[in-house]
Image (cartoon, rainbow, N blue to C red; front, top):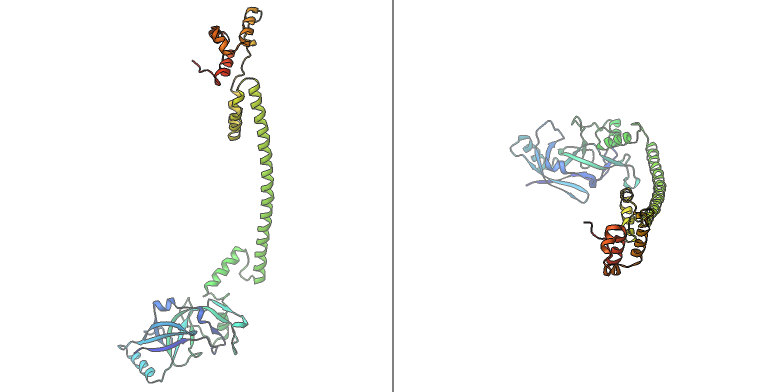
Length: 331
């Protein structure tokens, strides 16, 4: 029958630090739940851990011994006869630590590990805390000597250890901020504040420039509008377009000013009726005066529309438009 072991709890270990169960990453361990003897990873596993779980701040698992392995059977006997009671977590170096006094317990001299990853779990004779603990170097895979004070301090300093993924992110941050790897938190904070200050300044300048551009654009549009009205009024006055077409040309100017200006300038000015009379031709002048004063219906009754159309086409067009509200179709 599998025996349940407490692999880890949150008490302070003999090294002076403790590790929060809530920060444990068990995914790698669950994928390969090997159990060793005294963390001897150069030997074959003797256990398969099952039912890995968290209960009451503890990490628990059930040990299934390999009964076809002599060493495993020997250790299982020691466990069954109550000569061995302890298990131990083997973990990768801490990924995050905290000096928050609220997380420290009596007797704790080092940081609290708040994020870490389980590598393996072993049956052990004596551990560094109630559930023991070892760490493995990510690059070499070898156990880190926690009896070396300098190694322990380096292990707890997650901002400097080469095995900590967080360190890579901090190096990247230093590169982004154009700072040396040895930059202090104060220097980093100052660099970030300078970036924020530049951002705020650029935002203000952008608002000012946008306002100025809008003012200039509005002034240019107003000037174009005034010019468009002036050009259309002139075209109506010299007979190039009818007054009824004024609004249409104004809208065309609003859509494409230059195209409307070009189209309007291409329309020839209408020659006045009096301008069509040859100098010294008094007879034509009398005839023209007679035709001008009569409306369309009168001219029609008198049979003078043909004369009007042949000799004075512009006057004919004016009379036609006055009668029917549109220009006559060109033949």
